[in-house]
Image 1: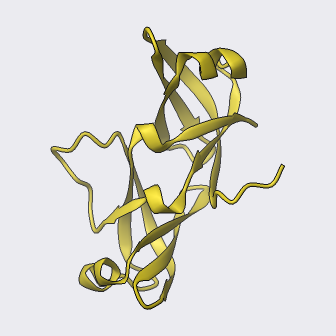
Image 2: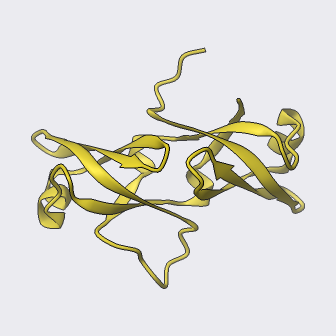
Image 3: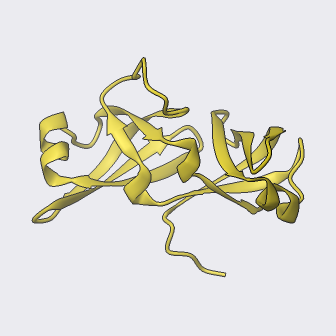
Length: 139
């Protein structure tokens, strides 16, 4: 199956914490970073997720925010440091590609944000991804 989701990060489940309806799934990406996904308990069961399961984390590019450094005091669980490899701007939006340990991410942000952050190839950034915006699939 082909998907339009640009960000597909392979990893291994390190823990699953289930609640009544939702579960948090922690995984270690192949590049060594930790990532948290908040998905339904039913999805955990359907995918057969357990510690040691191989998965692929899927994140739409519109759900990857960027900061010029680590951010304290926010509820966003996933902060992946990286380096900008390419910036393409249009009339309203910008596509920013960045290298993170072991993978590449794409972020779609406004052109104004990219300009205000001074993003160019080589810029150090932190990708911010809410755990509720991470989907999982079997690897």
